[in-house]
Image (cartoon, rainbow, N blue to C red):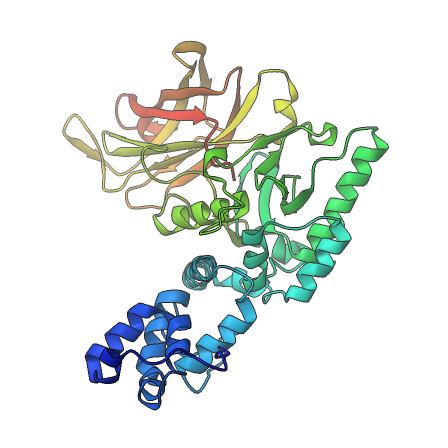
Length: 448
């Protein structure tokens, strides 16, 4: 950091102090006061020059535990690191820099360990010049937290004709699959943001609809369309509905948390959304699941209270749902669409009346769907998605997905499956019912 040409006279008490006591006082004073103290006397200049002092400043202000520059290249000392980071990010509050840096290092760490094939899709950080160029093309400024997010990582690589199939499942936000409907959301690069925002505004203009207030498209799906838009004036983040072409959107982050102009710690919808997504990855609420010949971040919840679990006669059923705001079936007034995922397994053994069976096979299903407290559907059917899964002890879960509309914003699903010990073609005992514990259908505070 640049030091003032002149400084105050050194306080007499500091001049007489040595070692750890002086180091503690300088560390508590902070980096800027320490730089000023270094101008006061030769004794204090030597104390401030100690790299241990700058190590503490780097850790406290920037979350650095090694002397690295913003591109992770080694530097000679922590003092040099603090200077480089201050010069590169001096236009942003340091607490926000530390927060965004921690977010990206944590997310990249999780991806590297659990989803390494997606790591190569992340671009290196954008420069201030690139951000200003994007803002000029958009015609408005991006919120400060969003700028910082892009300074550390310029979203995911845009698709190319040769990479579409391989990259499509690798969105760091993830998605869901049911029947032939597939969503997988990628974080847009600045270039993609500008291009898709212009296309969106042009479409609205051609439809004779008003263009949104400084809206930028920050994330989208490659398969079936799903779009997230950031209001760069208010900091609110929205998800497009089935009627996005008419400008219809829903907030996907609690508006009460958004404080884009807070001087101490500004936070916009995009930063809050990404941080919540990271928390769900880290705590196991959402996980990596196989998809054909690849893998993807699956948004069906995996843990309570959003995922229910019940075991009956050794058969375990886990169930959860996601809100699907962009699906065409949601276009009907008052109708919400939910997709649910059912996981069936026999962790140890199927046991009925004290007798163990080597297998059991699903015969039929029974669903009770409620809107709030009112039963709106009570239905029975053969099999599931045209199949009658055979479950064996210790095998991986049999997983299937389906969907249901709901004429309201919240409800629940519960029910049962009827199984036959052995096989349907060779039953070894009487049929028995397996409970599906209630799981919620609700519009969540955070929509992904």
